[in-house]
Image (cartoon, rainbow, N blue to C red; front, side, top):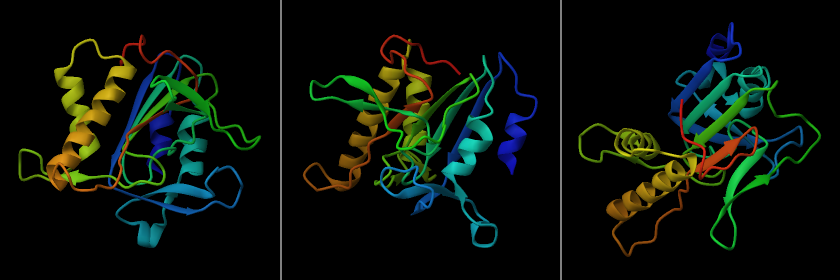
Length: 207
C-alpha cells in the first residue's frame, strides 16, 4: 500500500501531505467505531479487483504511527469524506455561529497519533456527495480541490478558520452557479478534523 511509503522513515520535524481526489463511498461498519454505522472508503481505479481502502486502514497506517513532532495534512476530495482519517475531533459550528471542536469518538478504540499532529480537510460530510466542476476551463476538477488551491494561492495570512470559511463559501458559490440561485441543491459542506484541539482562528495554516 502506497500509504506505507509515506510513513517510511518519518521522524520529528517532518511535514507530510496526503492528497486524494477521486471516488469515495461508504460500507457497513462491523467494529462499532462509527457513529453512523458506516466506514468511509476510497475507491481507487483498481478497487474492483483489489478492493476499497477503508478509513480504519488509513488511520492505522498513516495516523496512529505519526511520531511526536511530525505533522500530517490530508486533503480528501471525495464523496462521504467527512471523517475519512477517523480523527478524534471534528470542527463544528455551534448555535452562536462559532466553530468548536466536537469529540466524536464512539468507542474505546484509540484513533489518535503517536504524538504527532494530523489534520484533515475533506470535501463534505459523511452523508454528503461532492461536486465536480469545470469552473473556468474545460478540465473537470473537484470543487474542493479548486477552492483549496484558490484560497492558498490568493489569500494572505490564512488561518485554519479562514481557510475552512473560504472553502465553504466557494462551494456554496459553485452550487448556485451550477444549479441556479433559486434551485434546490444537495448540501456539500467541507469539513475539518484533527487529532488534537487548537484555535482555528489564530493558528496559521502551514504545510
